[in-house]
Amino acid sequence: MIIRIGYAPAAAPPDPDALAALATGLEREGFDSLWVTEKVTGPAGDPNVVLAHVAALTSRIKLGHAVMTLPGRQPALVAAELATLDRLARGRLLPAFGLGQRDPAEQQAFGVRREDRVAIFEEALPLLRRFWAGEEVVHRGERFRYDGLRVRPTPVRGGFDVWMGGASDAELRRAGRLSDGWLAAFTTPAEGERGRRTVERAAVGAGREIEDEHFGAVVPYRRGPLPERARAHLERARRVRGPAAVDEVIPELDALEAHLKRFVEAGLSKFVLAPIVPPGDWDAELADVRDAVLHLQTRR
Image (cartoon, rainbow, N blue to C red):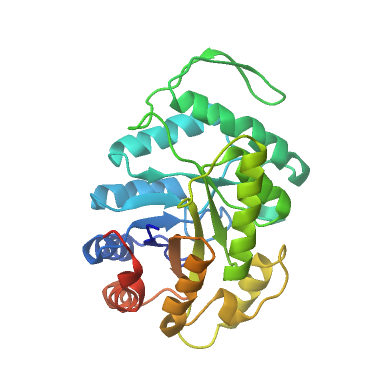
């Protein structure tokens, strides 16, 4: 199994100096990738703008969404935007999509009713694949209509392996039917294994196969007690799965290696580490994380 370890910055206002230190540090230390979460009502900024900035600062690390909201966006414009970013990044983009956060403010920002999100997503994602393949798209759907539209540019490799997030059974089954990989978040290793098996069963039922190494997790970690603000965020993130012990979801840094090994035993092999609290010194933080877990990575 090929294990890859990436990183996601803690939610904080965009800071060019901090972002440069993080991005260049990840590349220097041998991490696999940098991932950016999307929350319009949060402080971190637009993920594609952030990833474009990182692409200009780096040459090796891959660049991912963890995850990008699809309902509320026009598929043709998303296809062109992400293909452009992939071209500028020389083929390093890793798109991952979701329905959007379970937050009324986020749904308001995207102009999508909660009950409409699934239908929009399931119509939009296949259209993205067709646009990225360079197809002249003819489509008459409930929400999108195209009459021989071809979008340029296309991605460097003529398409993407598209990953999806999600925690509910319906979201996991959808990932099996539509995605090329599943990225869990705020989950325990045992839940990660159950989720992987659900995704795999759904893929088989749809006549598809997801590669064994296309299962991963965003893994938050902490130093010391969990701050109260982070505890409230954990409770919101766990609404679908219910309460869990903090150590099972957000381990301390010195327990992170054992935690990742449990995920590997559960069949997950792609990890996005995320500090709960933004560090004051990215060079020191990445050196500590490198020493703690990067030896688990099988390709550097």
